[in-house]
Length: 191
Image 1 (cartoon, one colour):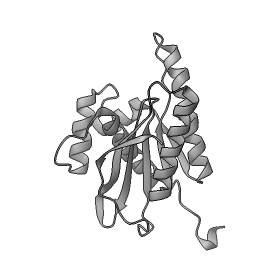
Image 2: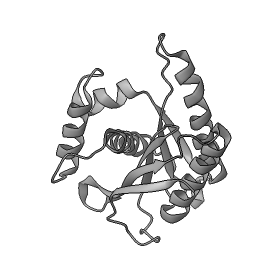
Image 3: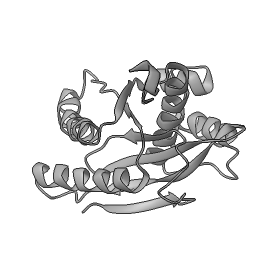
Image 4: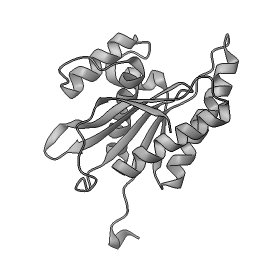
């Protein structure tokens, strides 16, 4: 399995009172940032349940790294049972088209894991996440870190950047899912 580096492990017990839990993912083939956020009763400020990095072995063949990523995600999903997965959309830079192709493999594993566990998926563009949190779609990594820390009342800036980005993605995903009721099961009378 991929190695984890946990940044914040304020974990709830697995029965988390039915509050919406969102898993935010910043995909990577060496370091995949993840963050789990939960709604908090009577508070506009979500709670960070867990955040960190799934580290994949750099010199392993691609298929082995993808299997490690799947194992790591499956463990996180089984532990926290999030309803929604917010994942950064692919972006292809004209100078590095191969990067987008390789990242497509990782993103495919992430989306397949979400589908296997019946999770709603929110694809979010990095520029959208930055704009929602900072007011600018071109915000720097440090601006995103500061916005995340301020929004969640964190005592220090989250890091590394993979984790800060995953928290930002999860936060944006939580707000979007709250507004649109994504991941909600219909009430008995609505079926």
